[in-house]
Length: 112
Length: 148
Image 1: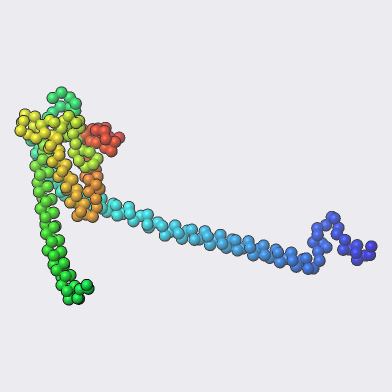
Image 2: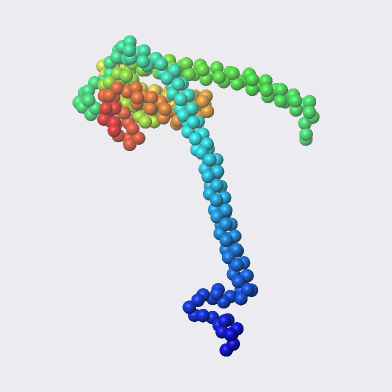
C-alpha cells in the first residue's frame, strides 16, 4: 500500500467528510442550500396563511351585527305603536274606570 | 303585438293616477279602522280588567286574552245579568280585534302579525299586576308573581 492510498483509505474513527472528494462536497452543499430554501419558503407560506385568516375574520364581524340592530329597531317601532294605541289603559285604571263593571268573583275553580 | 310608445306612456300615466288615488285612500281606510278598533278596545277594557281581577281571564304569550279555566267560558260577564254575553264570546270579540290590529300594524311597519302579537304579549305581561294570571309558552296558567 502506497502512502497516497493509505491517506485515502477511510478511517473508521472519523466521519466520511474527512475524506470526501471535491465533487461529493459540492453535491452536499447544494442539498443543504435547497433544504434551507425550502424551510424559508414554508415559513413564508405559513406567515401568509395566518395573515389571510386574520383578514377574513375582520370581514365577517359586521355581517353578524347588522340583523341584531334591525331586529331591535323593528321591536322599538312596534312597542311605540302599541304604547300609543293603548294609551287609554293607564288613564282608565288610574281614574277607576276599570272597576265599574261587576264580573264573576271567586278563586279559579272555586264554587260561585 | 308591441304597443306604440305614446300608448305605453298613456297606460303608465293611467296606472300612476290610479295608484296615487288609491294609495292614500287605503291609508285613510286603515286609520279609520284603527280608530274603530281603538274605540271598541276602550269600551271593553273596564270589563276585561274586572274579569282579570276576579281570576277568570288572563293574558297569553300569543298576545291574546284567555279564560284561566275552560268552564269559565260559559259564565256571564255580569253574573246578575242573563242578557250579558258569556266570557267566551266576550273574549272572542276581544281577540278578533287584537288579531286585526296586529295585522294592520304589521302591514304598516313591514313585519309579521306574529311578531307584533309577541311584542304586545310582552307589554301586557310587564303591565300585569302580581296577582294576575298569565300563560307563558309552556301553556300553564300561573300568577305573575309565581313566574320563574
